[in-house]
Image 1 (cartoon, helix red, strand yellow):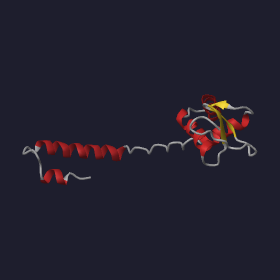
Image 2 (spheres, helix red, strand yellow):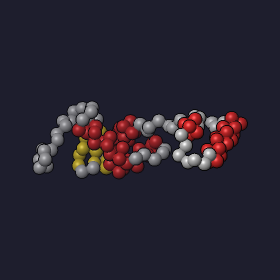
Image 3 (cartoon, rainbow, N blue to C red):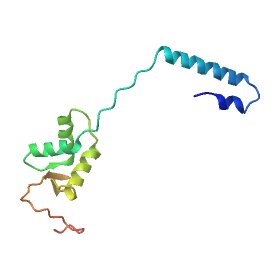
Image 4 (tube, helix red, strand yellow):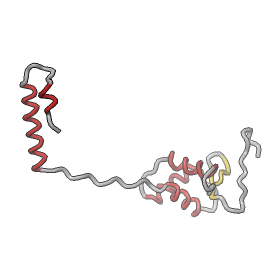
Length: 127
């Protein structure tokens, strides 16, 4: 990128600032050509949260609290996971999607079995 626009219509009448700026630009371009920067490695792709949560619930034969699912999924993945993404996967696939999870209580989920009906309580807590 050139400095043509800066030289053609300077805000300041003193050209010494523009001359120093031009010198700095040449110096930086020379350094960049001597020692080019390497591209950074691409970040790892997002963790497969839905797959991890499904595997955790498949491994247990009992309902689990969302915080326990999160802890087990992090252990399985071997790296930190956002608690929000685990809770979001549990919630989203309980009420929509393929409905692979079933909510059995406040914050407690289990893997839905095909023979289990999906009964959702109404707003007043009745089934």
